[in-house]
Image 1 (cartoon, rainbow, N blue to C red):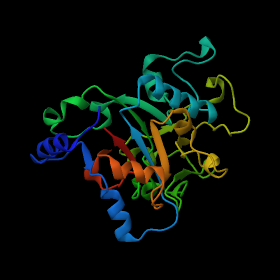
Image 2: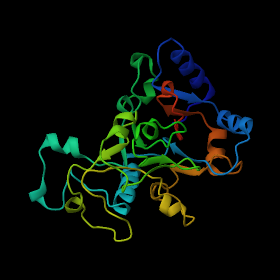
Image 3: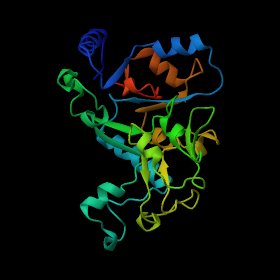
Length: 265
């Protein structure tokens, strides 16, 4: 499935009916023009999810690659059955760096009755949007969460005091709190990546440790081409090429956070 100009005009008309929209439509070349206008230089990481290629199987592969690499605890299906939690605690304690959810939950907004029918029920792959204007950074009292010059919104676990202000500030529910020692809930600990402590918040860091070694994020590598990653400020980067060629959408445009995860629909 791909959105063409005719579909775009139809959808744009629906979104123009008034009120807030659940997503922002980005025209092919629109981001490129904005980057050129500001004469941005250096590195600005961005991610494009090609929903035409993202099957449930591919999404599961991406999630597994991320969570196994980063020692993300699985409170839903612990390795020891004795650690099984009640349904209430499962939802409350779930740790997720990258996950999938249906359009109606991922793009919450108004005018749901007028949204494009093709989007209803679609499973979207979700993660931290590494926003240009991240509210989580503004509300953190200890600067445990901060934004790097390349746009990655980081977490310093040693500075985190577990106040969860960042969770309240994030409009995308992209952060999770460790209510319990996560280690017993990790099936196989990766010794090359640190585990977390009880009482800290964690999130996707865009595999900054892999980027430092010239590698792609684990989810991108596992996606088989469904995820496209690159430097938004580089004219010939794959992410610029994707945004130049396709209509894309972003989550919750009315908040002004300027998320850097785009979805080709």
